[in-house]
Image (tube, rainbow, N blue to C red; front, side, top):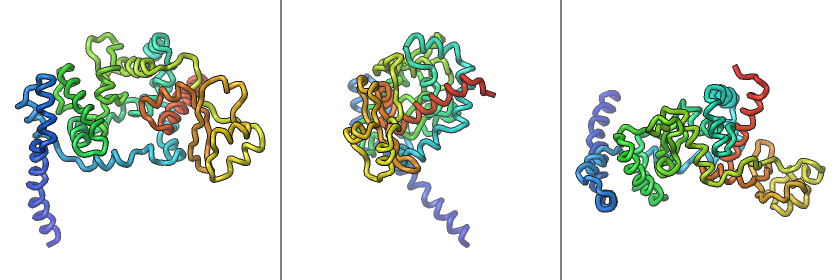
Length: 325
């Protein structure tokens, strides 16, 4: 009896779901966007209407964008992204593409380790690039999220990108936020910073790792990466006064850390900021330099930039000791 009831309920529900999806294209804000794309970029209106009729309403996209991993404490985030698997596979990726990584490092000044770590954090070296249709993700966010203006612009960039690349927009998959390929570039970043580093004649950030390597290096360089300059370092642990203050629950200010001897004298010539992370046993304090902020242009979270840095550090350590298998 229960099974029959559930079956009848699902049959009754399906037309509602389909109708909700079909109603998406009829929304005034969606119609306004379609007309904008037609007027500004000469898109075919009937083709855009047909495209938007295929968009599925995806509540999970809205749910995920409101609860990103970057809201978790550092000790949880670190365990997710700075793992033995990512370190080991990072070395394997480096060894496999060492020529392209060396070329990118020489041309753009961005360390190979940082390029590799970025791919590792973003997509596990291409193993997971996202399962959401990008057109669905961006459309849901563009017309339903608190940051709708940002995602509407990215939807605009995505439609331009697929037209330029001659790609069917229905077939491009990515993250719940609409990020594409192994480096998880948003459409605007794809259009502005992706390069054909492999020389194949066409940019491919989904399957061509050489293009991925060059594009990430180009992205960091264009955002101001400074060659041979520091990224971050732990605040000095020298002196009992500082160590005792770390045990307190109240966060320390920059001036308090300096007074407690947390900032080495020889580092003060470099512009830096104090980074506070929630460790498992208490707060951790780091010094973040210019290049730390450059990594944050990829993702604005301190947790993200620290994960990229630490993963790059451990990958380098393992590679230099020749422990890759």
